[in-house]
Structures are given as structure tokens and as C-alpha cells.
Length: 79
Image (cartoon, rainbow, N blue to C red; front, side, top):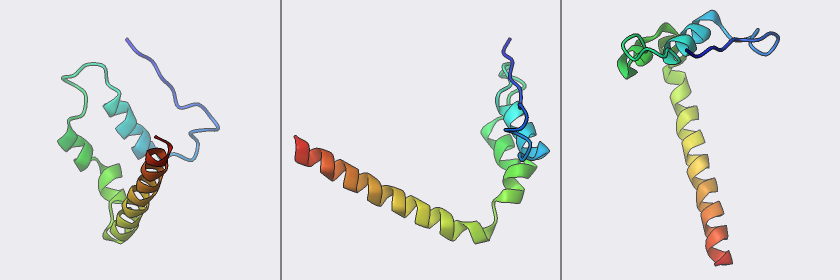
């Protein structure tokens, strides 16, 4: 069996809902562990997936791909 905790003060600012999701994702028994569908339907995911976040997600992904391209091209130059 595995064990974990949410030690203070590091986890004090994390919501109970987020901790519940983490707990269900870390469940050792595969029959009790959250499925992808259960994860996406969890209140923490549903409540934190707002349409207003979509532009930020899109921009972050674009930034990541751009930085990755720069890093890749930098590595290509070293070969």
C-alpha cells in the first residue's frame, strides 16, 4: 500500500476539491481509481475549466511550441 499526505504549509492554499481529485487519482486499487471520464467530470476540473481560460491555454501552448522550436533549432546548430 502507498501513503502520501498534504503537508502544511505547502498544501494549505490547495482546495479540498483539488485534494480529493488527487486522492482519487492516486488510488492504488485500479477498480476504485478515477477513470479519465471521472477525472474530467470531477467538480474541481469542471469548476476550473472556464471558457475564459481557453485563450490563455491556447497562448501558453503556442508559447511552448515556439520555445520548443527555438530550443530544437539551437540543438540542431550544435550538431
